[in-house]
Length: 579
Image (cartoon, rainbow, N blue to C red; front, side, top):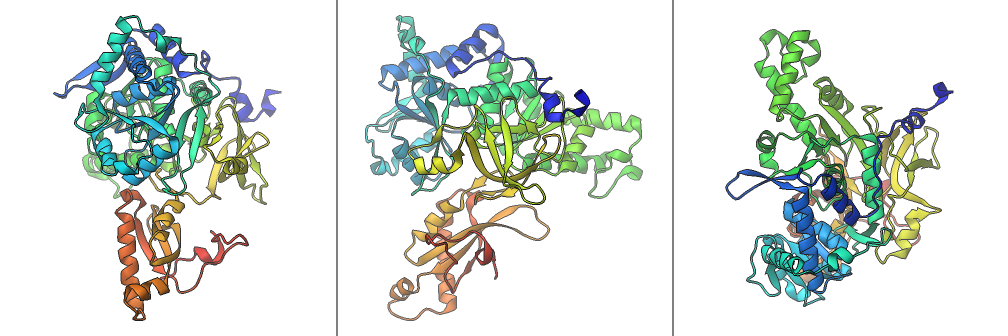
């Protein structure tokens, strides 16, 4: 009988056992009780010296900050958290999500977008880095809530309504010492919205994903079921914590599991930090893994005897057994000496790179997920893996292909306890993607006879860069179309020859009437129009993070093809980027 089971069905008999939790407060209290004096975080002090923060002290900090947030009137309110990955961010996220609704924001967002999301979410408080708080104050008048409170991680309090983080924490401890039990009394409803995430930076059309704590806790348990996290594991946190991928799998999963977390001090410090902290687990995007791979191959070809060297190629497979052992040890030592697994997501990766890392005794597990799914949907596991696949369905989650074509490719639909509650205040958008209990991902894929999922493309418009950054064309188009000299625009992701990176390209239909008026009545020449559109593009780029910058554009001389509802078609002739 077992011979006829698919790999996905066999996997169901092998899951690692785990203890159920449904909300963050219970999870935190459980971990603090079980792992009390174990290290939850390895941190650096101001002098660069590494010290440990225990599970008990982490829980106490969350309780102290949460108690002060309640005292300040934020029970049940929306509380934003923004800033670089840090211990303070972790404490603030948990405190905010237990006291009220946490709104994690991308620290790289343009100030206009941050203010817009504070307005849309109706945030009463924002905890964050001084840099981000000062950015908001430059346009303070645009905030709908002029009484919003800011808590500064850098302990600056020279701005209106701004308080030092350390002071708030200290005040919280005083309240606890005086018998305040308000935080302890909170009963978190695991099924109500407690996390509000914005997946798009579109100033005029913010889309917020509403997640419950059960959504995320179910994803933690499902992931633990297929990838065992050891208590001795140390997670190296590189990817931004506001994103569910890093937040769920790189922060909350290790906290549930009794492992430890350390923070990267910036992309320039990755190797330096790895050799300081000696992590065993790294969550990353393909670009990071590709760069590590490139450096390892380069180093091998530089240090191996000449007869084994291969120009720009991995020479490992052709090495004698004894040299392979030496090389594997050197590679592991280069990466801190303890690294055992890379978890890769956010974009597809060359399967040969995964094979190479496996040959070097560095397990590399690729997965697939979305913010709307908290985020993981499928993953390669401790038990079964395929280098060219996104993996198998995680425990308690199903997926299927809607309306497959002749080759089995269609839209990926997902069902499970990890699927979001809906889009914030957008019932029509929610109804478009949540139908009959299934979430319509907008991604194209196929499933083989063993249940492995293969991502083949995207039927939604999001552009995904090589390092996993999501770029929503509507955001860039919003800024372009906001200029009176632009009539319409269409933004696409394009690849160049001999380069697998995806770049932002724009087609712009100029508003000739407005340009003529701008030029004081003279009919514009082609070169004048091109120059003006170039200025428009430069202006738009100045409002966006680097990875969203328009790299190339063309000026159209005819209107875009449109649907019957006058929406620009994102297919057909409109997709051609002719120069």
